[in-house]
Length: 301
Picture 1 (cartoon, one colour):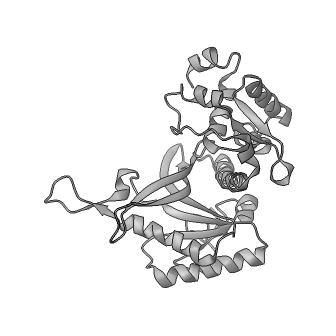
Picture 2: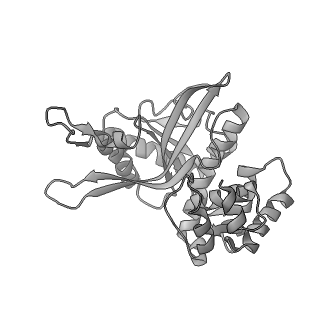
């Protein structure tokens, strides 16, 4: 955080206050409980409420009391977005200011669920000594697929989120994972979710001409990622029986139309929150009947 930010725009706010402000900005909407879990789970809830009170008094955030399950949701104000833009090293470069009424609409349920996914990984990393902090995921990452045959307008594939996770052993990074996150609230037909997952294969195969004509075409995704991210689809908003059936149907449809070039995993949000990503809570396109964790292992490590 820039020291000038605290002095010029936010008065007596400290580094932790500003870290909370940045996470609210990046994740669009966060509940008090989510903020507490992300930043200081070892402190009292009163501490978290004091941080949020300071941010609200400074005019940087506002709270909407009407939300799913009666939760209060926090979002940045225009002034808060102005303050965030003075941080050169901020993770989220896009400016997004939502009006309070948006927080009580469909966006709130979707955003809060996506953030629950990210928080499950933050908690797992904290327990294991890995790297996955409050800013480890970003919402709505758009990718151009180019124009479809016979058309000029480019298609876009928008991932609900992109999450990064750093596995650390003996003080050294041993693996670095990228995941596209698809949050499914069971509000669209199963075949549409399967088709959306299939479009990641389209992104994987899409190429652009190389800089030198003699060179082979280059994958579009290499401009953004050192390796192509796997996809984790997280299902919610239904009974366990309904969601497990939906998972089976989606995997069956996906396997009918696509090859197994990519890794596609599906899990239930309730399992992810309660057991964590390293529990065998996922089913994959490679082995739809075998429970594995988020990186494809069959047993806890």
